[in-house]
Image 1 (tube, rainbow, N blue to C red):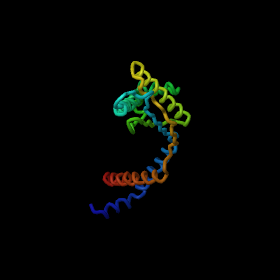
Image 2 (cartoon, rainbow, N blue to C red; image 1 turned 45 degrees about the vertical axis):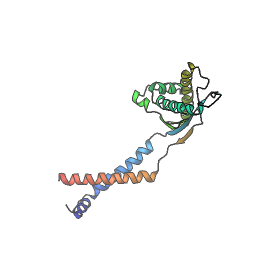
Image 3 (cartoon, rainbow, N blue to C red; image 1 turned 135 degrees about the horizontal axis):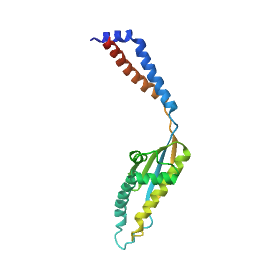
Image 4 (spheres, rainbow, N blue to C red; image 1 turned 90 degrees about the horizontal axis):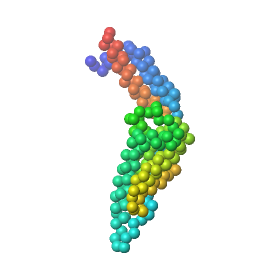
Length: 201
Protein backbone atom coordinates (compact mmCIF):
# COMPACT_ATOMS: atom_id res chain seq x y z
CA UNK A 1 0.00 0.00 0.00
CA UNK A 2 1.41 3.40 -0.99
CA UNK A 3 1.66 6.35 1.36
CA UNK A 4 -1.06 8.31 -0.46
CA UNK A 5 -3.47 5.44 0.19
CA UNK A 6 -2.84 5.71 3.95
CA UNK A 7 -3.58 9.43 3.78
CA UNK A 8 -6.79 8.73 1.88
CA UNK A 9 -7.89 6.22 4.52
CA UNK A 10 -7.13 8.75 7.27
CA UNK A 11 -9.04 11.44 5.38
CA UNK A 12 -12.07 9.20 4.98
CA UNK A 13 -12.01 8.40 8.70
CA UNK A 14 -10.96 11.82 9.96
CA UNK A 15 -13.74 11.98 12.57
CA UNK A 16 -12.63 8.75 14.20
CA UNK A 17 -8.97 9.75 14.08
CA UNK A 18 -9.46 13.14 15.70
CA UNK A 19 -11.96 11.74 18.21
CA UNK A 20 -9.30 9.32 19.47
CA UNK A 21 -6.65 12.07 19.59
CA UNK A 22 -9.00 14.41 21.46
CA UNK A 23 -10.06 11.67 23.93
CA UNK A 24 -6.43 10.81 24.75
CA UNK A 25 -5.47 14.47 25.33
CA UNK A 26 -8.50 15.18 27.51
CA UNK A 27 -8.03 11.92 29.40
CA UNK A 28 -4.40 12.74 30.14
CA UNK A 29 -5.24 16.18 31.55
CA UNK A 30 -8.16 14.81 33.59
CA UNK A 31 -5.91 12.10 35.03
CA UNK A 32 -3.26 14.56 36.19
CA UNK A 33 -5.85 17.07 37.42
CA UNK A 34 -7.60 14.47 39.57
CA UNK A 35 -4.36 12.88 40.76
CA UNK A 36 -3.86 13.68 44.48
CA UNK A 37 -1.28 16.33 45.30
CA UNK A 38 1.96 14.82 46.55
CA UNK A 39 5.28 16.02 47.92
CA UNK A 40 8.69 14.59 47.18
CA UNK A 41 11.23 14.69 50.00
CA UNK A 42 14.99 14.27 49.96
CA UNK A 43 16.78 13.53 53.23
CA UNK A 44 20.54 13.18 53.68
CA UNK A 45 22.10 11.03 56.42
CA UNK A 46 25.73 11.60 57.34
CA UNK A 47 27.73 8.72 58.81
CA UNK A 48 30.03 9.98 61.57
CA UNK A 49 31.96 8.57 64.53
CA UNK A 50 31.73 9.18 68.25
CA UNK A 51 35.52 9.50 68.50
CA UNK A 52 38.83 8.85 66.78
CA UNK A 53 41.32 6.04 67.07
CA UNK A 54 44.35 6.87 69.19
CA UNK A 55 47.60 5.46 67.82
CA UNK A 56 51.22 6.27 68.60
CA UNK A 57 52.48 5.57 65.12
CA UNK A 58 50.54 5.37 61.86
CA UNK A 59 46.86 6.36 62.00
CA UNK A 60 45.20 3.34 60.46
CA UNK A 61 41.83 4.77 61.43
CA UNK A 62 41.96 7.27 58.57
CA UNK A 63 42.00 4.40 56.07
CA UNK A 64 39.96 1.70 57.79
CA UNK A 65 37.35 4.18 58.93
CA UNK A 66 36.47 5.08 55.35
CA UNK A 67 36.21 1.39 54.46
CA UNK A 68 33.98 0.72 57.47
CA UNK A 69 31.85 3.80 56.74
CA UNK A 70 31.34 2.64 53.17
CA UNK A 71 30.18 -0.80 54.31
CA UNK A 72 27.87 0.77 56.86
CA UNK A 73 26.47 3.04 54.14
CA UNK A 74 25.52 -0.11 52.22
CA UNK A 75 23.82 -1.38 55.37
CA UNK A 76 21.75 1.81 55.66
CA UNK A 77 20.56 1.41 52.07
CA UNK A 78 19.50 -2.17 52.78
CA UNK A 79 17.77 -1.17 56.01
CA UNK A 80 15.50 1.22 54.10
CA UNK A 81 14.38 -1.64 51.85
CA UNK A 82 13.49 -3.84 54.83
CA UNK A 83 9.71 -3.90 55.47
CA UNK A 84 10.34 -4.21 59.23
CA UNK A 85 12.42 -1.02 59.31
CA UNK A 86 9.94 0.81 57.06
CA UNK A 87 7.06 -0.24 59.32
CA UNK A 88 8.97 1.04 62.36
CA UNK A 89 9.52 4.37 60.59
CA UNK A 90 5.83 4.76 59.74
CA UNK A 91 4.79 3.74 63.26
CA UNK A 92 7.17 6.39 64.63
CA UNK A 93 5.56 8.95 62.30
CA UNK A 94 2.05 7.88 63.36
CA UNK A 95 1.09 6.57 59.91
CA UNK A 96 -0.88 3.34 59.45
CA UNK A 97 0.88 0.70 57.31
CA UNK A 98 -1.97 -1.84 57.15
CA UNK A 99 -2.85 -0.74 53.61
CA UNK A 100 0.59 -1.73 52.33
CA UNK A 101 1.79 -5.20 51.42
CA UNK A 102 5.36 -6.44 51.89
CA UNK A 103 6.42 -5.51 48.36
CA UNK A 104 5.02 -2.00 48.66
CA UNK A 105 6.74 -1.44 52.00
CA UNK A 106 10.10 -2.38 50.50
CA UNK A 107 9.68 0.24 47.76
CA UNK A 108 8.45 3.24 49.76
CA UNK A 109 11.94 4.67 50.23
CA UNK A 110 14.61 5.08 47.60
CA UNK A 111 18.03 5.16 49.27
CA UNK A 112 21.31 5.86 47.50
CA UNK A 113 24.86 5.95 48.82
CA UNK A 114 26.49 9.05 47.33
CA UNK A 115 29.79 8.59 49.12
CA UNK A 116 31.32 6.49 51.88
CA UNK A 117 29.77 8.80 54.49
CA UNK A 118 26.61 10.12 52.83
CA UNK A 119 23.32 8.35 52.11
CA UNK A 120 20.35 10.16 50.57
CA UNK A 121 16.75 9.02 50.93
CA UNK A 122 13.82 10.12 48.77
CA UNK A 123 10.12 9.38 49.20
CA UNK A 124 6.68 10.79 48.44
CA UNK A 125 3.98 11.87 50.89
CA UNK A 126 0.51 13.37 50.75
CA UNK A 127 1.39 16.63 52.52
CA UNK A 128 4.32 18.63 53.87
CA UNK A 129 3.55 17.85 57.50
CA UNK A 130 3.65 14.10 56.85
CA UNK A 131 6.92 14.53 54.98
CA UNK A 132 8.53 16.19 58.00
CA UNK A 133 7.18 13.54 60.39
CA UNK A 134 8.52 10.73 58.19
CA UNK A 135 11.91 12.46 57.84
CA UNK A 136 12.19 12.79 61.61
CA UNK A 137 11.09 9.17 62.06
CA UNK A 138 13.73 7.97 59.60
CA UNK A 139 16.47 9.70 61.56
CA UNK A 140 15.19 8.33 64.88
CA UNK A 141 14.70 4.72 63.72
CA UNK A 142 18.03 4.58 61.88
CA UNK A 143 19.79 6.02 64.94
CA UNK A 144 18.12 3.43 67.20
CA UNK A 145 19.20 0.57 64.95
CA UNK A 146 22.70 2.03 64.78
CA UNK A 147 22.82 2.15 68.57
CA UNK A 148 21.86 -1.54 68.67
CA UNK A 149 24.86 -2.33 66.48
CA UNK A 150 27.10 -0.21 68.69
CA UNK A 151 25.85 -1.77 71.93
CA UNK A 152 28.13 -4.81 71.96
CA UNK A 153 31.18 -3.07 70.54
CA UNK A 154 34.24 -2.38 72.66
CA UNK A 155 35.45 0.44 70.41
CA UNK A 156 34.67 4.04 71.35
CA UNK A 157 34.76 5.11 67.70
CA UNK A 158 31.59 3.45 66.50
CA UNK A 159 28.98 4.91 64.17
CA UNK A 160 26.63 7.83 64.66
CA UNK A 161 24.01 9.15 62.25
CA UNK A 162 23.48 12.87 61.67
CA UNK A 163 20.42 13.82 59.61
CA UNK A 164 20.32 17.04 57.64
CA UNK A 165 17.18 19.13 57.26
CA UNK A 166 14.93 17.53 54.62
CA UNK A 167 14.17 19.20 51.31
CA UNK A 168 10.44 19.02 50.54
CA UNK A 169 9.13 19.93 47.08
CA UNK A 170 5.52 19.93 45.90
CA UNK A 171 5.11 17.75 42.80
CA UNK A 172 3.86 19.52 39.70
CA UNK A 173 3.43 18.70 36.05
CA UNK A 174 4.11 20.61 32.84
CA UNK A 175 0.99 21.18 30.76
CA UNK A 176 3.07 21.47 27.59
CA UNK A 177 4.82 18.15 28.17
CA UNK A 178 1.53 16.40 28.93
CA UNK A 179 -0.01 17.88 25.78
CA UNK A 180 2.88 16.84 23.53
CA UNK A 181 3.06 13.32 25.00
CA UNK A 182 -0.71 12.78 24.85
CA UNK A 183 -0.86 14.22 21.32
CA UNK A 184 1.83 11.78 20.15
CA UNK A 185 0.04 8.88 21.83
CA UNK A 186 -3.31 10.03 20.45
CA UNK A 187 -1.96 10.19 16.88
CA UNK A 188 -0.47 6.72 17.26
CA UNK A 189 -3.67 5.18 18.65
CA UNK A 190 -5.86 7.16 16.28
CA UNK A 191 -3.92 5.85 13.28
CA UNK A 192 -4.31 2.25 14.37
CA UNK A 193 -7.98 2.75 15.22
CA UNK A 194 -8.55 3.96 11.65
CA UNK A 195 -6.53 1.09 10.21
CA UNK A 196 -8.50 -1.41 12.28
CA UNK A 197 -11.80 0.09 11.14
CA UNK A 198 -10.65 -0.01 7.52
CA UNK A 199 -9.54 -3.62 7.90
CA UNK A 200 -12.88 -4.68 9.40
CA UNK A 201 -14.72 -3.06 6.50
